[in-house]
Structures are given as C-alpha cells and as structure tokens.
Image (cartoon, rainbow, N blue to C red; front, side, top):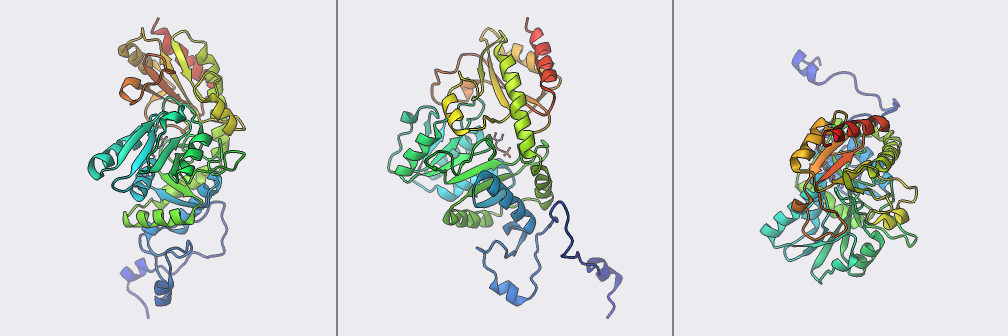
Length: 395
Ligand SMILES: Cc1ncc(COP(=O)(O)O)c(C=O)c1O
C-alpha cells in the first residue's frame, strides 16, 4: 500500500543501520521513544538503564555521557541536569525535608547557599554555615542530614580538610555531597580520596566548565556509587521533569576526549601566572591551593597527588585601591574578558567584594577587593603581559 506524500515525508524509507561504527556515538534526540510492541511497553522497568521510555528519563546519548562522567569521577551512576546549579538543586530537593539541618561551607558556590536559604525560609530547613578550613566550626546536631563540601572553595579557593570532614559526617550518618566542579574528577577521586578509601556519597559537577570546555554549553551532573541514592535521585529527576538536550550532550561528549589535556594545560598555565602574580606589589594576597601560603595547601597536597588544580587564581588588591581603580583595571584587560564561569578557552576576570560574600570571619584573608582570574588556553606570557599593562593604569 502506497502512502501519500505527506505521510511519506514523516515515515522515511531508510532507517539508520545498527552496525555502523563512528568515532563519536550516535546522537539520539527524543521526547517520544517508540516501543517495539506492547510487551516492550509493559515489560520495561525504570531501574533498568537500557529500558528507554521517554526523553526526560534518558536516551542512549544521555546515558553514554552519564556513564562517562561517572567513570571519570570514580562513581557508578550519573544523572544529567540542564546546569550545574540545577544539579545542586536536585540534590537539595531530593534529600532535605522539613526540620533537617544542612551544613554548608562559607565558601560554597554562592547560588547554592542562596538556594538553601530559600529552602530555609519556605520549608523550615535549617542552614548552618561552617568554615571549610576549621573542622571545629562543623558542629552538627542530631537533626543534621546533609553536608555540602567544595574543594577548593569558590572564589577564595581554600582547600578543606576533606578527610576529617567526611569522617566526622559519616560517624553521624550525615550525607556528604561534594561540588566536584573544581577537581572535575581529574585532580582527585572524590569516591576514594584517602589511604583509608574514604568517599563522599554524592558529587555534583558543573559540566558547563571543563567537560564542555567551550564556554558555550550549560549542563550539570550528579554522580554516586550508591544504588539507593541513585534511584531516589532518578525518581526526583523524573518527577521534576529535568531533562537535557541531546545536541548539548553530544557536544559535551565530543569535548570529553580533550578534557584531561585541557585541564592539565590550564593547571600548568595557572601555576606560571601564580608565580608572577605573587611578585606584583599591587596584590597583598594571591589565593591558589598549590601555593604554600594558601589556606588548606596541606590538604590539597595530600589529596591532589599529581599536583593538578583548576585554572583559577584570585588576588586581593592592596586596600589603597578603590572599587573604581579595580574597575579601571578590569576594563583595561584585553585578553581576559569580564564574565562569569571558567573552564573555557578564553581567560576570564571577575571582581568581588568579599564583605558581601561571607557569613563568618576569615582572618586568613587580607583586606582589599578581590579579583578572580580564570585561565584559559592562551599562552601564559600573553596573559601576564595583559595584566601587566592593566596594572600600569593604577600607577
Ligand atoms: C563551583 C561551581 N559549582 C556549580 C556551578 C554552577 O554551574 P552552572 O553555571 O552550570 O549552573 C558553578 C558555576 O560557576 C560553580 O563555579
């Protein structure tokens, strides 16, 4: 029976062959997934990662990237979310309930803290802030259910004593969740980071940074080794309708092959910048965990055994420089672009006023305005020349 042209346009005669092998995995774009027959429809089970039923629950494309990310980070299961922040929010909404106490480092990624404060106001979840480099400030009560960790912390880049914090949380059966964006699964293994085989329970990762590497795609992941946590997260992921675009997933999958090379290259370039920045009189402090004077350096050294770190370095300007001086400096940079995020090819700069960002006192941080540099893939000497030129305007 011959179909009409309109129907032929929809039901094309050629089907993609199953045997073809390509360097990159095939891309599946799907809201609807077609069942072969009613048996396939009724026999499927949501816990089977090879049973596909609807786009929001995943396709071979999303599971391929998820398995890859889980493997890189040392976990077993992975879920994808449309951004790093949405991955964070999924964990919070899945594991926190009314009356719980959640512990969060003062230097955690800012919007995570904002999200938690929002939950506190609306759902009676108590947010407690600890100093990531002082374990004595982590004093959970019986209501504590979740501990957020970040290594190194956002903007000021202190490296926490992960071993002590995770041990203490585990003794009290508190869920440990690490924002693993900085380490990207490359600087250290969050699922086996000490000689005692300590592991966090869950990681989240802004794939927007190194896995994407292009500064153009947003995505987040949640990884665990624990099947029960995974199933809980999977259900929440499904009922919240969290989904990612197959095209975006394919782009990130494509970038993964160069991620380790980029990470290590950016790590090395940042160390070159670090040494130079430390010599400049305009800065009273340079913050980077590989620097022996930075807070938590010892813990970084213990855990990041190969000496790698993300391409981030912050400087605190002498307090004699005003906000308008710092703005002038940032505006004068040409290679460093003014923008949020990191992990892309282009170096970025962002200015922060620490006074507006921290709840606790941090005597290890000097007074002055802070500028964070995210080191891209440019030649380090060109980046140094760019900063040198901008600093001249402050003379
Ligand atoms: C440490 C950290 N975690 C999470 C995120 C959020 O990622 P996204 O921008 O994909 O929402 C960011 C973004 O800057 C980040 O720096």
